Length: 380
Ligand SMILES: Cc1cc2nc3c(=O)[nH]c(=O)nc-3n(C[C@H](O)[C@H](O)[C@H](O)COP(=O)(O)OP(=O)(O)OC[C@H]3O[C@@H](n4cnc5c(N)ncnc54)[C@H](O)[C@@H]3O)c2cc1C
Image (cartoon, rainbow, N blue to C red; front, side, top):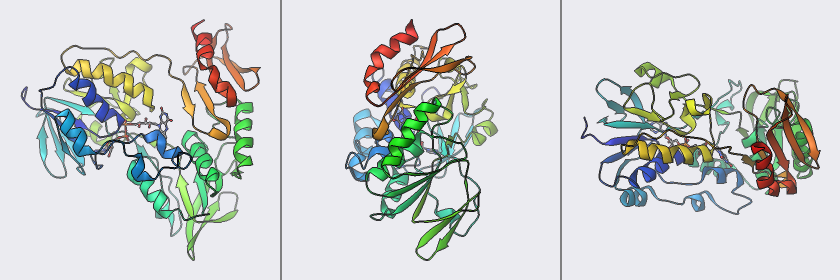
């Protein structure tokens, strides 16, 4: 099996970047990519800002699968789904064939969480996590459409900003009582809500969609408080979850994602993982479903796969919330840190721990330009 290829599962940022990093060290070892998608590369963060950038789905693609495969000396099996894994024979079974690997890289991301909704149009609810999902959303969006978004988290608020800014009527429904409730201090949520409200976003707090039915050519969304709203499209943005069931069935240690050690190795020595599917020992056993951790992890993995075991070390990686009406930059305290948010300037909040040290920050609006200064607070 030592002569078998390195097999990479998934053609998202984690898959392609791992291969690019590996190829910096090793141009010869055969690499096979298996992906349920077309394999074309695109910047996923741009999906929630495409209207503001005046881009069509096709214009978001920044690398055709065939070109990338040729330039990286990769055999790409596109539109191919992995179904199961045999760790003892080192074989990945797909819907078209069985592939033997020397090393397997799990980079298959996560799946949108689906709420069990009733109603005869429940299956029309869209989620956007891949380019093809976004292409479908754009196909269904007629000018002036009324859109109901489920979930006022990062993705829901970004889509609300992009769609409302492009002239769509946006309703946002969330069981919490404010935007990004799990991440932001209350005043930051309020500033974001006001800015998006100015664009016409209608908020529905302490509420959730229970049913979506057809009403002529439109949809009727029923909320838990009994209100009904007639809309043209419902977009679910309630979160993602890695599908670990088949990995666990194969015998890999999984929790909320597939568990990987500091060298990104799973509980099987021939199988590695990174990206939205991975739960990182190097990050306090957290999922890190963001771009910067993937770039950092892929660099370490490239070296490890080429024969130099390299633990991944994650720096502090603030996350930008792409809501231009009121942009935000967040560096959240690690889970379990006790403390409280304090407003220290207009649209600046610091998370101070019990010993008075700054352990996180939120910058809003123009203050997002103060990133370098804010990073120093964490280092102090
Ligand atoms: C709308 C949106 C905006 C975002 N904005 C930001 C941002 O501004 N900043 C930031 O840091 N992060 C952002 N993120 C998160 C970031 O984009 C993701 O963390 C990252 O792109 C995940 O990459 P990945 O390669 O792990 O997974 P994915 O991109 O999901 O790729 C997974 C790949 O695996 C394939 N696959 C899945 N299952 C199988 C299977 N069984 N067999 C074969 N192939 C399979 C899929 O087809 C896909 O090609 C955003 C996410 C979304 C959805």
